[in-house]
Length: 142
Image (tube, rainbow, N blue to C red; front, side, top):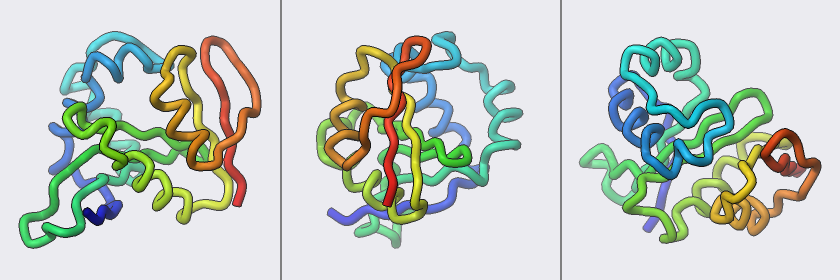
């Protein structure tokens, strides 16, 4: 299976909200654990759409690909969300490696207890930088 990162569009709004409101995502969110409403999501997306890339299956591009999750950049900060049905399949690692080719310096913030994310980022070469209010800061430099 080959994956690619493609820029998100407003057509991706519903699936992005679904992933964002997944209970595991909410549990490990730094900003809020509350479910996000569509109206608030659309306002946020309007400002941040250019920072988001959809992780999709590059083998089935005739069918617009299968969306596995998303990667978001905010400056040097990177965040990844995977559709729950694709977690543990190695897609996160492949997607993160693609994202790492896009920037020379990246920072990931991982909530204490999010072992899967910690394992993903450290296995891809991110190093511990600091511990802040409830989350770890990991850094990657090319």
